[in-house]
Length: 276
Image (tube, rainbow, N blue to C red):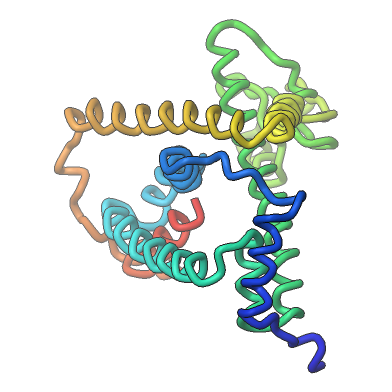
């Protein structure tokens, strides 16, 4: 047990840092201040901010989503300060794995290392699926229709609804349609083979990362510029459509379930926004 909880002394970490800087396998330092700031902003403004904010307001917090944003911002600031403190103390590659190795021991570092792998795995796949939905909808507006078999996960049952197009046929949707007296056999149905847009975007980003960190940083700068521009345009144009009567009540009463409006809904909305 003692071996599992063995920590790497700070002196050893500093020696490893010096060895990395002079070794032939050291990482190239090609990112400047603006690139690093752009990477940080790109990580903060994820796909969730465009998708989950409306859901959090509609189902959890209501107009009090403003408070959820404030609580989430405070939590993000505290997490950022912790990472800044660790990075200044242990300025080497490894992120949370290295920090855990130095403070809690090898076993916890091993767990956190695998947690990071899973986080990036599921995070990237979730964003890719969300991006795929946007692309399919965007192309449909221009009359370009991707076959439904190529727009969802393998084995996903799809059904074509007259007012919504191709959607995932869940058990809840099946019961809802049957409750309305709709015969499902009269509607087109297929089984998805692969989510092709999601696979392509993951492949493209992977190729970009393999090409080099400098090229990846330049591409990220462009994407961040687009995302920030979209948010600023939304604020600028959306300001003229604000209706104050929709802000009453500002904090809707809780429905009786934890996280469904009320203060618990505000906290739940903050949690959604934090991980968005």
